[in-house]
Amino acid sequence: FLLDKGNHRHFMAKEIHEQPEVVAHTLSHYIDMAKESVVLPGELPFEWNKIERVSISACGTAYYAGLVAKYWFERYARLPVEIDVASEFRYREAPLRKGDLALFVSQSGETADTLASLRYAKEQGLHVLSVVNVQTSTIARESDVIMPTLAGPEIGVASTKAFTCQLSVLACLAIAAGRARGAISDAEERKLVRALIEVPRHMNETLTLEGDIEALARDLGKSSDVLYLGRGTSYPLALEGALKLKEISYIHAEGYAAGELKHGPIALIDETMPVIVTAPYDSVFEKTVSNMQEVAARGGRIILLTDSKGAAEATMPGVTIITLPDMPSSVTPLVYALPVQLLAYYTAVALGTDIDQPRNLAKSVTVE
Ligand code: G6P
Image (cartoon, rainbow, N blue to C red; front, side, top):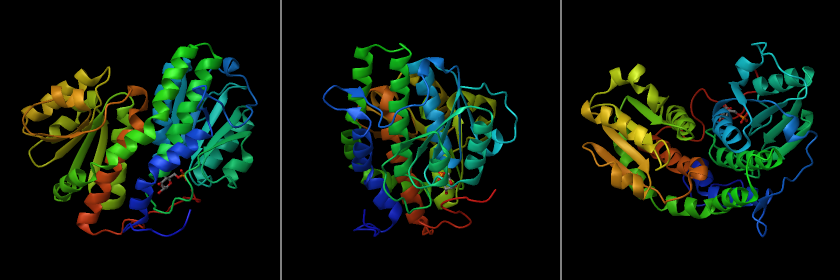
């Protein structure tokens, strides 16, 4: 990995474009391509069927990767997951069961709150597994076992490629847990793994939509507030979208579970506030569409990220659709991350902010 921007204007753009490659690279360390099965690169110091609960903690974007993983562990491994931002986990004195699993997600491996949570979990007698990008980091050193992301150095303060690599590793972990616990069959595992193998291809296809996203972003830059909505594994994506936009464009943005729209944010809807909806055509798509109708009925402007089936069903006034490739719903968070990142990136480009070094933010927060 050369530490220059190549032919990109910012490290962030370079890192967004690297994702098909680094995700493929990361997956190749966790998947036996011929057998279409997950093979973890390290030996686990515990047995999945002795684990009753997984506690995930992380900060920022890594926390949202953990939130997606909660859906996966619960769905594929029938394993209950609790998740917290590390700054809450470390102080809230959660009752933890000795021998359960504490999972930490961190790009830098140096985030102070995540590290403190790790030490707390260790003291409580939990197994400590970390998904880290910097393998020489303190979190990596202090963990019982690490599952590395192979994203290479990430320079842009706003995390992009580390996020999708974290999702890749977490997906493989959830599949491995599901198999070990007898929660998924070999055929189901093969199906999930095949879907992961196809992710870099879908990412490349999605990157061809860059021009359309750039055009939308010019408009987004004129707003003072933006709302992101999603359900299921698209809910953490909505949170991540809002975070990315805030971080680099300084536009106020909020991510919400679409079903919570009527419990508050609907009061904000008018023709000036864009609503970005991440909604692949999955088992909760129809529910999200009814939330979109509530927005449209109030004159709201919607940008919908969906696939061909979703695009065909979501024809309503005020909707601009970005049509992503069709893919199994198990992998949509990995691919939908790209347009979400690009929207934030091009909005910031339009506004002329300091994208790789946004004001007041640090790449790695090593103090509390
Ligand atoms: C900072 C960075 C974020 C990152 C977060 C967690 O806030 O600006 O991009 O997601 O820290 O960092 P970590 O290194 O633990 O993943």
